[in-house]
Image (cartoon, rainbow, N blue to C red; front, side):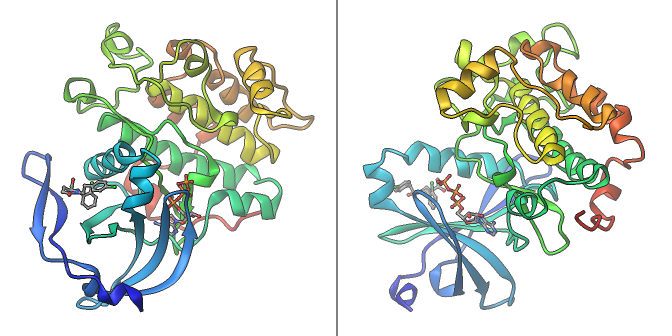
Length: 325
Ligand SMILES: Nc1ncnc2c1ncn2[C@@H]1O[C@H](COP(=O)(O)OP(=O)(O)OP(=O)(O)O)[C@@H](O)[C@H]1O
Ligand SMILES: O=C(O)[C@@H]1CCC(=O)N(CCc2ccc(Cl)cc2)[C@H]1c1ccccc1Cl
């Protein structure tokens, strides 16, 4: 009930103009426009609540950030990066959409798509491992979303099953863009330029490099550990780790502590369990490559035999998710 006492605030509604550039339309949305419900989860600096828009009776996930805590923990720039990244990623079903942001004296509010199917990590833990059909479907949805992010000049930098949420239809919604890298306009380009330099020779080079952030140990790419630079291909390394983990039930690089995990990554010290499907193994071996420019580019991943039968594009997001087995 305490949410009620907060005043309404000016909110910006994120839309894109006729040239596809994100524009913030000023709409009067505030705390009092929503009825807050159950807590969906807690982050280090946030609480995520289910909330219903009183006018249109639509349910959202509202991420509430405590200003004092963010300032104390020096996380203000992450708040701005999350907002700016999400404002550029408004046209893809596989990415949690940001509808409004508003604030009151104590908190910041992000009104987001509600993904109430939980985290992919939770489903994987429950199943142990996914079969090939499920891995193919979820891998394809995640890859399609990565391709879109990269085409908008966004590197996620912390892709992992925990950050892949599921919606009502058990389709994926990637979240957690606070640690993303937003490349400048020139590198974003319209085509899917995955920065591996597979396109024109200068692709990998002209890319602006990200600095000084390391993701989650098990999914960190070797280039982030050796020369502190992330590029779009760093997300493809994490994608390879996720595919491995869906089929094997554990990530490829995992040791007793973070330092030992890092040692395994830079030494490419991992093995496939007996019986690991060979077509998937071939794809993963072309993603878990130390040199980012030698990782399979997105368009080649899409045409790899492992994804045979996948209809890329809109139909991938219209079809029924396979029952988890
Ligand atoms: N759009 C959403 N729909 C449903 N649940 C969500 C949504 N966004 C986040 N959650 C859940 O709320 C919890 C907190 O998410 P949040 O992104 O605020 O923090 P986090 O990124 O998980 O934690 P940290 O900030 O420490 O990285 C998570 O368990 C997540 O599963
Ligand atoms: O960038 C914006 O859209 C506005 C601009 C005006 C404004 O004051 N804010 C909040 C800035 C801010 C960021 C972090 C803290 Cl801890 C406090 C204030 C921004 C904001 C409002 C609501 C939610 C997020 C943000 Cl960054």
